[in-house]
Length: 343
Image (cartoon, rainbow, N blue to C red; front, side):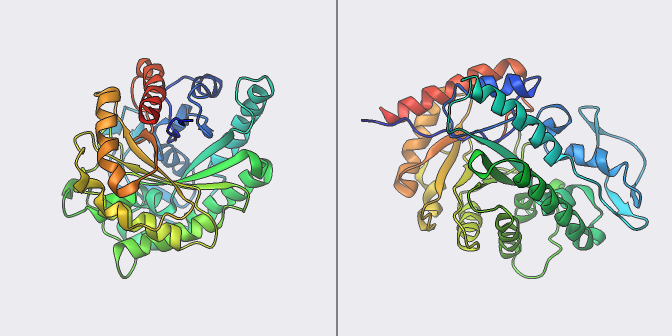
C-alpha cells in the first residue's frame, strides 16, 4: 500500500482565530497541528517588542519611524536599568489554545493521536532582531531564561503525549549570510565559528523539551513580507545546522524542516543533505509553493530524492502573513502534493 507523504505545518496560518485554524488544518492529516499563531503573534517575534515596550529597564533607540504593517516598530532596544522580564506570552497562548484543541478532538473534529504543536523562537533570534549589538550577549541569557520558563509552563500544563514543540531558527541564517545581504547584516556576538555557536544554543533549547514531548526544528531563511532574507545558494548551511542539532543533544529530534526555494529543482541544491546522519529524525522539505502547485513541488521532490530519500512536505515558512483567501487552497495543495508523491 502506498502512503501519502507526511505533512508538516510550520506554524502561522492566516485565519482569524484558533478554532478556525484547528478546523482547517485538521483536514490535512498532519501528525502535529499548530494554532496558527493568530492575533498579535501573526508576525512571528514582532509581538515580543510590544512586550519589551512595557518592561522597566528597556527603552527604544532612535526616533519613531517605519512600522511593519503599521503595527510593529522596528527600532531596537537598549538597557537603561535592571531588567526583569515578565511571562513572554507563549505559554499563556499555548495553554488557552490547547483547551480549544482538546474540545475539538473530543468532538471528533481533530483525529485521535494528533499532537498540538507549539512553535517557539530561539533566544538568539529574538535578541538579534530586538537588542542593540553591544548588549546582545548579556541580554540573550536573560531572554533565554525567560523562554525556558515558558517551556516549563507549557510542558507542565499540557500532557507530553499530546504535545510537540518546534524551535524556529531563522534570524541565525541572516547572521550566516550577512556578507551576501548587507541590509540584514547581523554580526554574531559569540566566539568561534558561526554555526557551532548556533548549534550549541539549539542543544540547550532542545534539552529543555522533556522526553515524551516531540521535538522539532524549523530552519528558515526568513519571511519578510513573504520573502527570504536572501535565497540559499544550496542546502550546505542547512545541512550543517541540522546535523549539528541532531548530534548535539542526548534525546531524539523528531523532525527537522528545511526550506526549498521555488526555482531549485536541481540535485545540486539538495546534495549537501546527503551527508547528514538523520537517524530517526523525520525530514520535511518546504517544497510547497502556491505559485506552481503540484507540478512544481513534484519536480523539486524528484531532485531531492537522491540526497534525502524519504521525506515529508511543507511550505518554506508559515503562511500567516499571506492573504486569508489563500489559506484553504494552500491546505488543499498540501494534500494534493502529498498524494501525488505517494502515487
